[in-house]
Length: 246
Image (cartoon, rainbow, N blue to C red; front, side):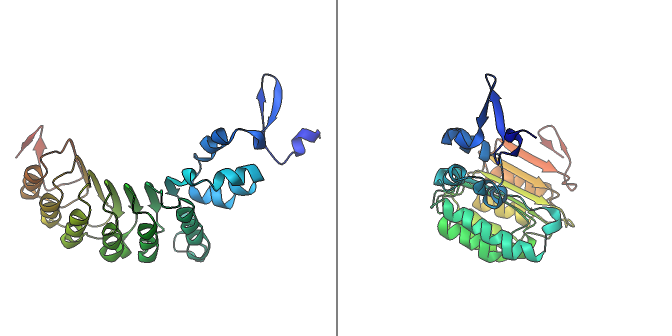
C-alpha cells in the first residue's frame, strides 16, 4: 500500500499532482463544507484537521443551517441528548447572524425559543413535523422574529387560526407562507380567513391538503393583493379552472 493511501486527508489531482485537502484555501474549504448539514459538520468535518476546524468556527458558515434528522433517530434518546445540543451549538456559532434555518423533526418549544432568542435577524424558518409544538413553539418564536420573511411548516394535526394571526401580526415582513398538512383534513375556512386578515404582504402562498372552500380562497385573494404565486395542492373543497373559481 502506498503512503498516500494511508493519509488522513483525501487528495485531489490537479495538473498531475496530488494536493492535500487540508491545505485548500479557507474560502474553497468553506464552499465544500457548506454542502453538508449542520450535524455532519459538527460531528465529523470539524474534526478532520485544525484548518477545517477553523473554517467550521467561522460565523459566516452558519448564516444558513440545515438540520437533517435520519428517520431512525426520530423520537430516539440520541435525538434529544446528542443531536439537539449539537444544533444549539450551530446556532451559537452563528453569533446572531443566522438568516435561515430548516429543521426536520427536531422541533420542540425550548429549541425554537433557543433559536429565536439568539437570531433576531432570521429571515426564513422551515420546520417539518411540528405538530406537538405548533400552538406554543412557532408562535412564541415568531413573536421574537420581526424580520421573518418566509415560514414553511409541515404538520400532521390542524393549525388554529389564532396561531396564524399571531404570526401574521408579529411578522409584518412575511412574504412567503407554506403550510403542508400530512394528516387528516377538515373542511374549514378559518385558516384562510386568518391569512387574509393578518398577512396582506404575502407574495407566495402554498397550501397543501388544506380544507378551505371557495369562500376562504376568495378571502385570500382579496386580503393578499400582492400574491404572485398561489399553490393549492390536494385542496379538494375548491374547483378552479384557470383563474376562475367555480
